[in-house]
Image (tube, rainbow, N blue to C red; front, side):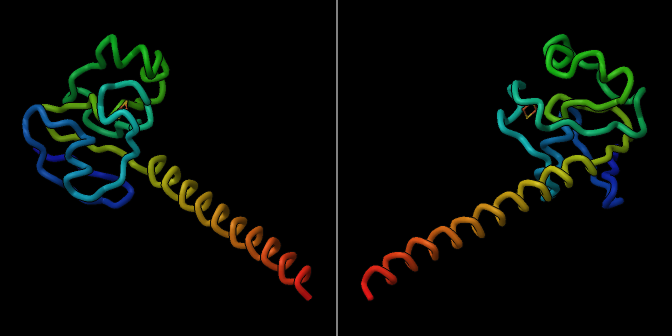
Length: 128
Ligand code: FES
């Protein structure tokens, strides 16, 4: 059985009982995970695009985290998402999160450099 990951449009063979998060990480596809699948962070949500009938329904523990929105938008916790047939999941939201995180790091580094330069500049100015 296969899992197709969008928007990359790549497919990987999934083992019985293996979570989508585990499969993605095994294949270097980014899905954010803070709790490593406890589940408690809800950061690992993915859209289940196809194969709704090929996945194990969300547990009460998962529903406590994702709420009933799942029934509307088909977003599941990838650490809890296990399938018994082919499925397609969309990682677009995960890629956007990764991009936003990267932008924040770049902004913070830029701010740090500017602040450091400003402080160093003040010290140099005082020495003159
Ligand atoms: S990795 Fe934290 S809830 Fe899935």
